[in-house]
Each structure stands twice: as C-alpha cells, then as structure tokens.
Length: 69
Image 1 (spheres, rainbow, N blue to C red):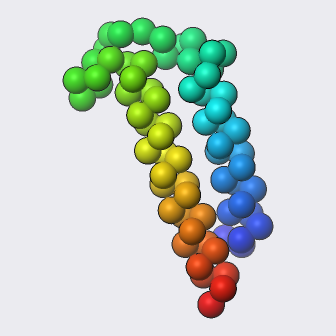
Image 2 (image 1 turned 90 degrees about the vertical axis):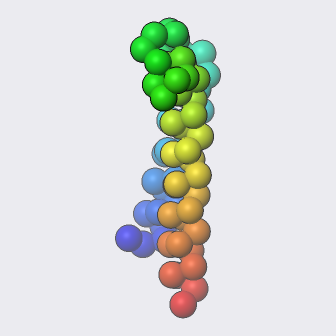
Image 3 (image 1 turned 120 degrees about the horizontal axis):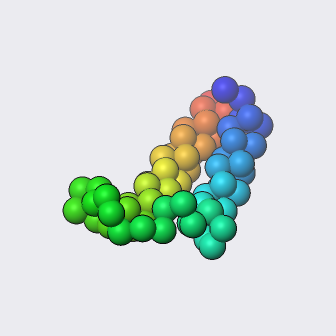
C-alpha cells in the first residue's frame, strides 16, 4: 500500500471514528445490554473505536517507516 493511500484511509477512519463516538453515531450503540467482556455495550463501542484508532496509527507508522527506507 502506498503512503498516500495509507494516509487517506487513516483520515477516513478518524472521520468515521469522530462520527461513531459522538451524538449521531452513538445512538445505535446507546444501550447497556448486552455486556461485552463485562462492559456495557456503549462503553465497549467506544473502547473498540479507541483500540481501532491505535491500530490505524500503528499501521500508518509502519507505512511511513517503509516509505523512508
């Protein structure tokens, strides 16, 4: 994957991230049940997006490091 494509995908992901954890995107996940690993679903929803953000940043770092070599 090219560096330009990786950067674009990261921007798209973080735009979706912003939408998913704020008011309009949180509506479908705004419930307590089911519990996911002991967390209410709404908290697990946010935790999923935070972990996904970390993975995307790690992949972007690898793409940037590979482009420098």
